[in-house]
Image 1 (cartoon, rainbow, N blue to C red):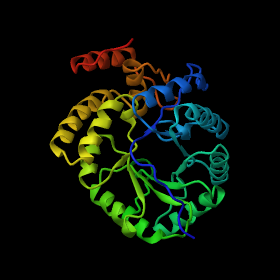
Image 2: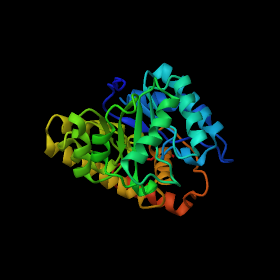
Image 3: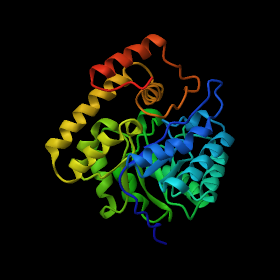
Length: 307
């Protein structure tokens, strides 16, 4: 049985989950959030990923966030991808079934994070269980070895999977190893979609033929990201590198102040109309001193602070 057809290409934004100061969900932000990204030219949304703190939420919370985005994208006409992994397998199965019920356009899944797969065969067996739970929804694997410590070679994995999971269509590749990324892109005759997840190498990804991306910074700088991809896909490497360098300066300025998610949430509140609120423990909020320093440094780079 052949794999499901999956045609989406371009940017999918890993959205931040809005929390209240009491660490409840603030779902009222989501319609405005979807509109902001859609108006900025972003046509894809990823819910409950790493930047969305999916693994810090209960199953019910993850379902509520996914449902809120499913409702929002009916208006904004965006592609909806839902990350279902990072939980005990019965919960992953439940989340996959739920994603299909609410008509997600795609499902993304981390590997098992405790009894980690050690080879492609073990990973395929795990993903097959997830795929069987939602057989009508395209399934992608979430490769993020810096967090998962699952270091299976993605080129070899994609060469070996064939049609064993009919719903399987590709991977999110969050790694700076572009030699491996290129092998994954060309595996099995270029059969699978590769979404590059590393913010600082969008232009480099374009040079090896990658045309689809899931980087967090696009929440805040959608215009810059779109320009990089447009130049890179068109073969204007010099312009793409120059634009990438400017974005990278900004990312380094933001992310040096703390954990990736908390600094991105802080910057989004400072630079866009969307305030995603605080992070959930054990991640810690930034000190007032760190926020003030971030403001000053962003102003020096030419950005206007909203609050």
